[in-house]
Image (cartoon, rainbow, N blue to C red; front, side, top):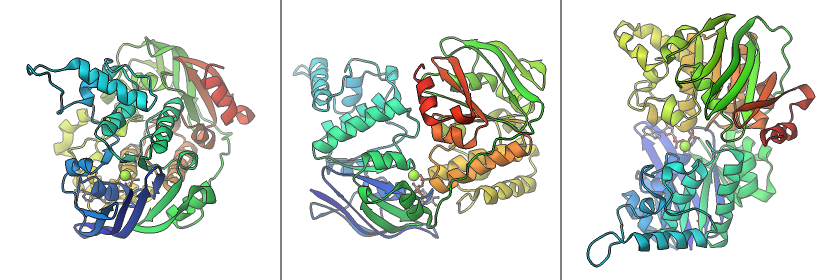
Length: 492
Ligand SMILES: Nc1ncnc2c1ncn2[C@@H]1O[C@H](COP(=O)(O)OP(=O)(O)OP(=O)(O)O)[C@@H](O)[C@H]1O
Ligand SMILES: [Mg+2]
């Protein structure tokens, strides 16, 4: 069966987001949907998934026209949309999640747990995944949660699965697990739309690609006929040159020093220091503890022992507000959970640094707030209609830029960036790298937490590799290469 979208157009107010876009997907095929931040990828898939409606255009399944006005309609036609913020309930078991709203019951009206466990097991067997149906969802890592959600879609007979940036917050082994599952699905004739900014993943897992630029379909073809450079060029409309790092030789005074920091079960005996003008990378795999370590430094994780020195003075940071006042900036790992405040508009998200400071909102100088944000909006090339629109009306990558913008306005002396380019397109990634390097030249001390070795190599002067909460080694110069980083990250 073939899925087709023909001449799809959609505008939000004056903003024409999709302009007569056509897209198709065959069964047993993985098709990448690519494009810069704000190109219209999620919007196109939201239309297919029945989340929103197109202004014009047709959706055809096996040649038959369909109109989806709700996600349920789209699902019953065999199309499942796996959103990045997964729809699972942590406090229930896997099998209970699989049957939410469709629980199997015995004749006497009681829930038939045995049958639900059996049916769940059947789906896992079908896709060759070793998950205990009775496990609590909260105990699963992010990749298994995604797999459970896909399994639920399969149980409801989904023939087409849409995945919108499924790997953004996954680590390498988790990504491989999801890919393994995608290959199995493909062999079973399921068609998959794969949205991602990670072009190397696209080369690895996808058969075909379709590129949107400013709401227009500009290129499509077989992945085997192109390189990542070709794809990047289609996306941005010109050649993307990746700069390279020149190691700074005029570092300033030490800004941050950590001595013997521990917090079970996350990290254990970590010591490090960062100087003004330096970019320190911290990398490793899932569970290496780096995110928790710097959450503790920023005052958002309690219970750590050890010492923190700022500008040579011992400090005890007990709250994020205190950290901000001391001149620390922090971009968290998971934007959707910690980086943005969904109910606030773009301007407030891009200028108000912590909840604690909201109390002072009455004193905000609105003119200055707007002017400051406008400056960052241009520097970061944030694509938006009106700063008073809700933050969630922005595309994912542009939301990430807004999170960065507020810190740039505050001029921190230490900036901690966890997963800084999450959901950001290839062109904008380079822009963010340039901003990191510019801040370093201006004397800011930077810590970049990332699981992407390429990213670390691109922007960092040196990097610490963590493994199970401990720093295994430091790499710099020649030794800062993908091979060495991977070797250390897996325990050396
Ligand atoms: N509900 C909405 N209201 C107003 N504008 C919207 C809404 N949803 C999306 N847009 C706008 O539509 C455009 C396309 O957004 P979309 O989310 O489809 O981009 P995307 O290609 O998925 O980008 P990203 O890679 O950053 O996720 C953006 O300019 C966005 O601001
Ligand atoms: Mg999107």
